[in-house]
Amino acid sequence: MNTESAKKSFLTKIILISTLGGLLFGYDTGVINGALPFMSAEDQLNLTSFTGGLVASSLLFGAALGAVFGGRLSDYNGRRKNIMLLSIVFFISTIGCALAPNVTIMVISRFLLGLAVGGASVTVPSYLAEVSPADQRGAIVTRNELMIVSGQLLAFVINAILGTIFGDTSHVWRYMIAIAALPAIFLFIGMFRVPESPRWLVTKQRSDEALGVLGKIRSKEKAAEELAEIQTTVNQEKELQKAGFKDLAIPWVRRILFIGIGIAVVQQITGVNSIMYYGTEILKDAGFAMDAALIGNIANGVISVVATFVGIWLLGKVGRRPMLITGLAGTTTALLLIAILSSVLQGSAALPYVVLALTVTFLAFQQGAISPVTWLMLSEIFPLRLRGFGMGVTVFFLWIVNFTIGLLFPVMLGSMGLSATFYVFVVLGVLAIMFVKLFLPETKGLTLEQLEQNFRNHGKESRHMQESYGANAASTD
Image 1 (cartoon, helix red, strand yellow):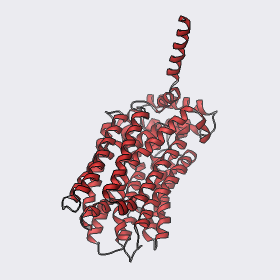
Image 2: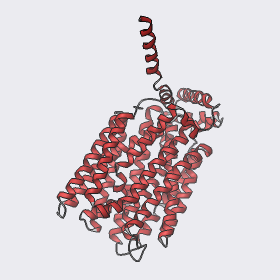
Image 3: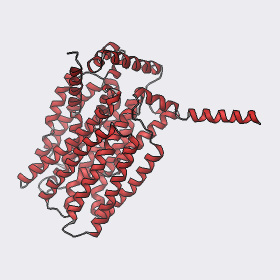
Image 4: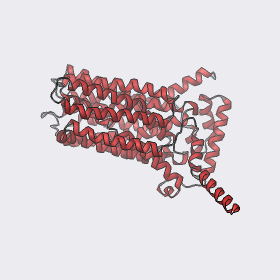
């Protein structure tokens, strides 16, 4: 069992089981896309544009809080145990959503479900980053993004199947939601079969266990070398107190947090989740019938999965910065075309197909470049002592922006129309490109420990050069 193939097999098992959290993340955020029109019926929850937005976005507000507390809990309990606890919350809240008799119970259940989604969005990438070899970290961490979009595609397919076959049964939305209970059960059982993060074990003075975990997924030499590197970093920091807002007094920590928050906001202001949550409504607004909109929305899910595969491949060959800039340029252009053509072609039979083609193009750039880079960089820029705090704060901002867009989008769509709504996202896309060009560093090819040193040393070299120049100038006067 000590062979190279056995180590790869064990690492694959870790990835498949832990990323079921990503699958749940994707399914629970995507299922509302097709369920919302059915639960809006008068004999069901009788939703307005505002209460519909509230049902969709209550999960996102819960996710914002779950991201903050999820990071802290994973630092305290360990990544593995935290994922197990999240699977229980996934199961209970899913059943609550499926059985909800009114809007109030639905919003509360969706909020609780959001706590699990937010916790998973922080814990699973951190866990994957900490078990991954440095040269494979990009490909492994982005498997979680692949599972997120696969979960959304699964939701879109199930929505289309149940919606077209049982569309005359208004409570069909309950079955759409209830299906998510199954992967929650599999995640809970599966986490008994995977190890704890070796980096977390070292912080708890359990280095022998950490070496045992590393030895199962690395060669003996690499395991010992990586353990020594982790121990060195932990020993350097053990005199320091737990990371928190007080650490913002340190310039390099402020810079990391600023960059992390910026990355999180950039991913959301593209408007991606307006399509992932309301894609069916957008296609209906463009001119499709309900059944056609449900089926057409599957194309959005398919391209998301295919593009994520491409994105994982590109991460091994292209830097994070150029990928993000290219992705943002593509999404902003697609949004601009939607805004222009939905006005020019208003009332035309071609409009729904044009909008579908452009949403597919948008998602190709979003899921092929922007989203994989986002989750990877958030998992790798924070040093060990700051990882739980940093991921919690930055992903909190990600979910708050997500919540705001999820709540306001149906209201904007109803009051402003399709064209004006997407012009707003075009402006936000331009601002996102400017942020990446001005502030984002390149992180490709560096270990987590090397990244920390780079952030610590940022600006020191230029200041040293300035001081040397000043001294040399003074000596020549």
